[in-house]
Image (cartoon, rainbow, N blue to C red):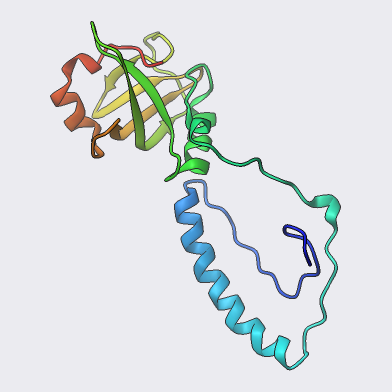
Length: 177
């Protein structure tokens, strides 16, 4: 029909969303599933072997238009909330924050690849503070840590967090906005 995601259902299938799925990985899985379902459904539809089923519109939800600014990270949120924002907005618009080098303007940095640690370290840190923990570059959140694997400074190509820190040793110890 003319509505958005309304009308009768002629075929459907479920897919479990994995805890590490992002928009990008989920779209790949759905395209494989969808093409298979379409190939299975079309012949049945053409032979009139499928009876359309009305859907219950009370379960319908609408998402707002996603904008670039929706990817802004607020460090008072939990690592899990930031992780879920990353999963939903990756690869576009992605998640980002701002870093201020001493004596310079704020620079927008995209956290291209992250993971999380749900527990806080023994040492107390400021929200948004960057530090090393083991082999990882970590950022303190309201609860837990964001572990940065890949960073993309504004106007530059993505690079490993380790390479970024090697080129910008003042990054460690700074506090992201």
